[in-house]
Length: 206
Ligand SMILES: N[C@@H](CCC(=O)N[C@@H](CS)C(=O)NCC(=O)O)C(=O)O
Image (tube, rainbow, N blue to C red):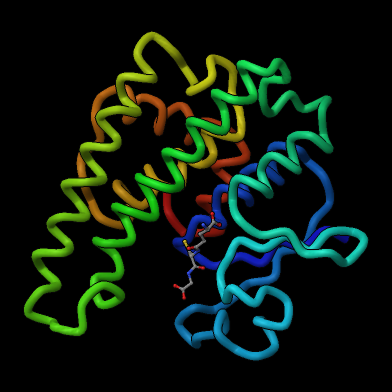
């Protein structure tokens, strides 16, 4: 069966939401970061990057990187209409996800969440965290503009919304920040979806 290697409070929650949206049978393999399980030889044999999300598919092959997993799930479940299929729509979906994963998550959130990855000097960590927060909220302001007049990033619900959701979850439920208005409305819309409710139950948040 398809298995999602998952860790709490990580980007893998977005893939969990997608699997719930699809409604396909899947297993969850919890990778406990508090025990460093992502760096064990056993896990690295499965994903040498030592990261989640990783999707172990029916044939045993492993797919990593959020965007790749999301696009593969959307394309292999076309009836679920999880992304546009016209060239412009495909390109815009990838453009949006690349910005959310590359800039909102990797360049901004990670700086706030993991300042020790950028400086060995604890004295610098507060400044790095401040930079990360400022960068993330500035990036979300651009997402806010993209959401103006729309319920979802691509118009209809798509894989890009699940990428945005995990960042919203981090900003609000983990960090306690205030989102820009359209992003906040999107977050509320996401929380009304049964797939996100399953994810929030697993995360232990209301
Ligand atoms: N670019 C990767 C990012 C994956 C990533 O950074 N995952 C984090 C959790 S959000 C992780 O597994 N970190 C492992 C660690 O911090 O040791 C993707 O899109 O999937």
